[in-house]
View (tube, one colour):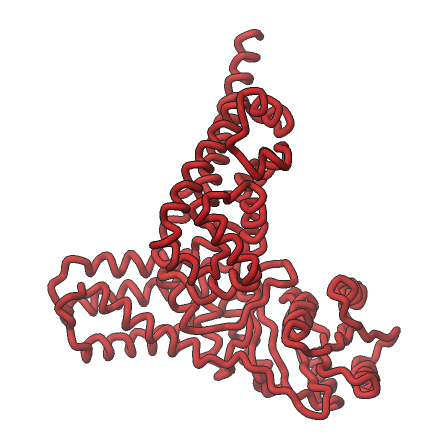
Length: 475
């Protein structure tokens, strides 16, 4: 997410390192780099111009703190201005009583409206609401069936009709929602490949028919300025209440996220950060600014961890760490939680100072799969007490996992060292780790095991190369 912009910003700040103080000259140099980075990220020109002006004014008025380098002062200023640019925070959904609260989703075809409707439905269920999904996209083939499948998967009811009149479907759906006491009605409307008068009239007529309490525009963030321009046109016809940016996990530039609030005046409510139905996040400008500048996003990381770990289970795990009885079964639970949180790379990117180092690391979730293969080849007793794994057991485990005995030996040794280290730290440094992850995430153990997994992968590659070379020689 925004890798290109993060890299360019870091390059600008590094150029200020070693300067004794902030001057007009080095601010001007830095702003040229910032301006270039923003324009290359497809940020709106006027937004870029105003942003650089605001940063310059703030920097010139900043009292230079002797203990900080100019680069650190500029990071703070740019972070504050990015937060202002994308803010303020407005993730609240205003519910009416009596219900249902009608939320209408609009946007171009292919922006992810139908999937977003499902994600938003799941989000509402987690908030204790009873939503009704309404299939009112009558233009795109299979749109109704797609929403039905999502509804079945999420166990959320879907309203649909065999009709070609979107206004009629919307009206009937509203009557159905009221009659059956739904809290929220999520209306998935039709899109087009581009904005045209027919499309605008259709969504305007649907909005007029059911008078939605909130209208959210769903935008594909990877479209950059095209997304911003379409948002501006939709806002002129529909009076939007907010924007949902999709596919942000694949957006290396960030132009839409940085421009859309300034251009439309409408807040970004949610962001889609993956294809799975739980990959919808509330949008927090301050957290996004930190991610863009490579400072991580600890708050979101903690929230994700808390969703995955039960407090009682975490306390039991903490006790095991303190006693040194942490076993491979416990580790498998943590690996599954890591996957549910987005994978190793996503987790590390949210840690301060780690985003710039991720690309240099050989991190792939395939390492976790290889470790799982070895652990699943162990017996219950071996997973609970890795110390019992001797030479004959290593051979049997290796055969079951499709690896070599020394691969099993390396993983077990790494695991034991990490377990012993966690035991020694349980009364001190681990306290901070416990508070951060509610006692649930043993990053040291996972990191060490992944390192062992990568070594297994590298050895497998070397063996394949040797085999290929051997075949060539025999020929």
